[in-house]
Length: 421
Image 1 (cartoon, rainbow, N blue to C red):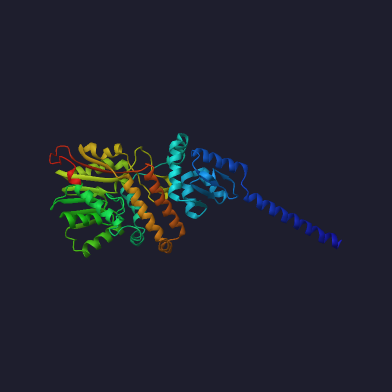
Image 2: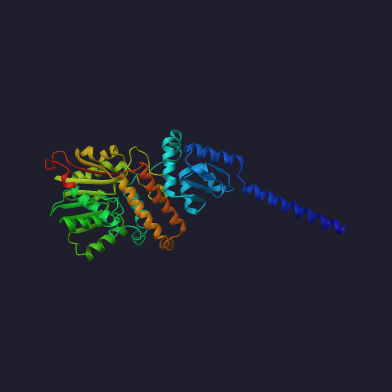
């Protein structure tokens, strides 16, 4: 009896161990429907020159032609991607559930081109991952959105921006220019387009860390009132103007563009329209119309698109909430109601790809400091954001428009573009 009693639990334990081993293998081996789901996902992308690999080394794609290999490290991230696409991919890369062997920019370029060339993929992804309810940019929500992105900390941005803390597209008349030189060239390019004259009264809407306002006052003899709703940026800009002795010529106001008052010779906005929301374009146009002098000049510099579509879902949720890059047609909602006349339109798309390339390199050089400030997830998220931005400009899914305009009855306008060059 005692031997029988002792033999039963031994047999039971052995069977249980065999079951656990078997169950463990089954848990880690991808299932037929999971492989089918990945295959369908690959087809919907247009069969790009990428290899998609599951946690058990099941792979789709041709190694010889692949730009990169994307490994999904567990079944949870696979299901998330199949259900919510872009957001799950961004989150999976950020947390380390997705690993990419290859250049991240090249990978996204290949994905973008493949999607564009495969009309089924484009329509599927637009329907599944880009169509969503978008909240109106009210005054309160605009503040929340700007705080989310820009008030991360001045020390963070100082690590990888240029000395002037310009977080907008630089201008490279010589492609080999340094980032510092190109950002100076951008500010001068803007000032020449606006034909700034000593004594001009200038309004800047959305001034970032204040570099352009200070540049205009220093080098063109104008007086600037700059509006911004980022507390961190306004504090930084005001401290700098005070330290450099320009507080009587440059005033930074922590307020929304909708509250601008007064009459001005020039209205300039560099990198703000993306945050306004197209439902507020008429309101912005009304503000410009109300405050612009009879012979005043306006320049709006904005990321844009050739075809209207929302911002990347992942970027909207994780990096840049509330952002919307307009088409030129949509930008006309700022101009047409007040009957403004366009004087000049320029597209600096490739300049922005090069700008973000500089930012990404500096960001990578500072990853140890960024990790200490935040964590590895933050580093990977921003690496993806910057790499994706380069790829999106290179493939034309984003543009960079500079539009100069004035009142339709203003006859004091240049006869040529000679003043620009």
